Length: 367
Image (cartoon, rainbow, N blue to C red; front, side):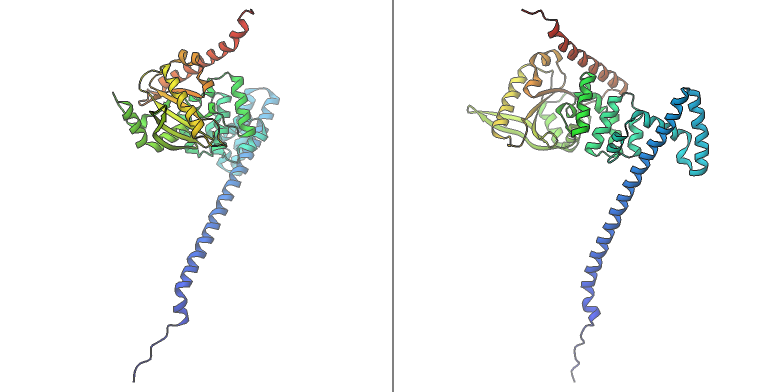
């Protein structure tokens, strides 16, 4: 008598399907929990930030009424002891002074509300100690727009991003106008994007090297290079060949900026800036404008990276009007104090040149 084949039970037959359903269910529920936790964390962080601002504003109001610095220290010390006893260490003397400084630095509650959609209390703690109000506003608005993590913000501040932007070299009135436009319209201009100098120390170049070595090193470290260029930059092509009047030309590095919605051509030069570079770059930019620019894009910009600049030549050539920027690059960084002095001196000199340029036409005698 042959043995009949045993049929698998319904439970056994359904187990693979059940396993798939369970894994899918687990994945979906896990995602829901993570999203909810993130949303709660954002809400709590925003709530704490506005609470700290309100506490700081209230304490500041009390101190200003007395108009005595000693009273301020006394009232904060007393208040901190009472709050710590009831609510814990988060309301100690040091933190209360931070809250007061927060309200002093950002006195407009509407601005605070718009910033805290992306900035948490940890972001503000990094921005508040900065000395210059324009500098603080720059980092706060760029952090909001580009959604920097606290680690990124720290890296940008330590890398003196503000001091290196073209924006910082303008008169304060013009800086304020651009920052207000950034806050109100999310309007990002080239002066907020382009820097001088660019830090290329990550390339590992030391001593003497050729332009080809510089380009090869940048391509090897393209991710770091794009980060140094700024958020939203993408690599398009290297040594792009173009034919003009039956003659071959090669563009060094072609990038695209999503923020500026335009092509950016980078030309690499080893020595000091030369006036002849302008003609070459203008030719390339006009070619890109004619053959590569899309209908919804802005006019291409050029960036000439040199080992050293030439401010007077650059000013006389009026490169900005041609859509050309010139900047130094540093493959080896000097000590931080030396770099700070150099950058502050460059900012002062650039502002002086701009102000003199604005005043000079008024001094010219009428013909």
